[in-house]
Amino acid sequence: MSLTFKPVESYREDFSFRNSAEAIRRFPFPFPEDQYMYSVNLEPATSRDPGSVYEHCFDIDEHYRSEMAERNRVLERDPQRCLVMPHMQPAAWDALSVLMEHLARDYPQHFQLDRDGDSWHWRNLALGIDQSFTYGDANSLPCEPLDYITRQVQGDFALLDQRDGDLFMDAGMVTGPADWSLAFDAGMSFKQWHSPVPMAHQMGVFDRALKYLLNIQVGQPVRRLNWTMTINPRLDTSPETFHEWGSDRGSVTPENVGRLVHLRVELQLMVRLPRSNALMFSIRTYLISMDELVTQPAWARRLHRVMRDLPDPIADYKGITRYRQTLVDWLRRFDPEA
Image: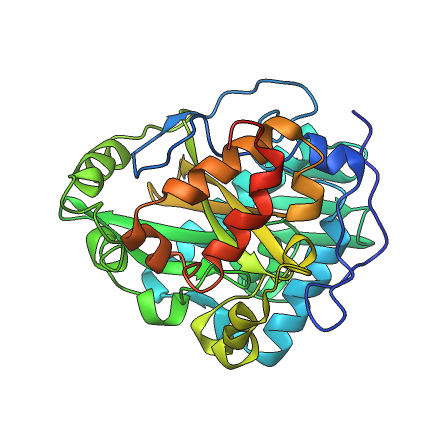
């Protein structure tokens, strides 16, 4: 599939973000059944389905320039969205290496990497970046290595330090989170940062997930899908900016639900970094409006049933309770058996 970038669209203010027909077709619809319940749902991150979001480890799509512009806007306002604890500097360089290697291999028309020992030359043709640097020497880059490379890759990133039989969120670049904060979660263990999730702890989901993640090996990444809902195509729904978006949930009406309500899906990838042994957690976010989603009849029918029968604690946690019935009523017309 040839990759063409759209002109820069916005994830705020006028919300000019839209999906092309191709982007709708490859959207990672997250519901394999008519009901939803928490599960570990991890699978090997092997390449499959050419042209899909699963073809490469790090998916680059038509919204690349738009998302990178949004990242820069968020960082201008809040540089603390990128955080690297001192002991995670080797992991930051490790992440830079892995990301550059994957991008150059998977998208050679847009990214190029030449290496001669520790002398590296990186070209990002999509953003007009041409950088020679010395691997491991932070002074040879214009900014810290994790900051540098994640300004050029779609999705958020957390670097997890593995120690004492647990994972700790000790570094990351998070500018488009779904109602969580890197600054708040920094230093927390795996179960601590997942503590707000209802029902899943009692079901043992996180015990099983942690055991699995601790045993991920180099060269054997895994992935899973997660989802929530967002009003407007807004990437940055962080607690720090709640005053900007929290009231949006009260703006949904039967007339505007198709335009305002967006299904927000995270393709989460866990990669063992080879030099530092840290675990890189990539959170690649996809947004689709209800108007766009219902162009796929099977998705519309299934989403109606999932939303209708969703357990109330999950609906509350995902922040959709206030407009849930309006959404269910709107989707009912697309379910022939409703």
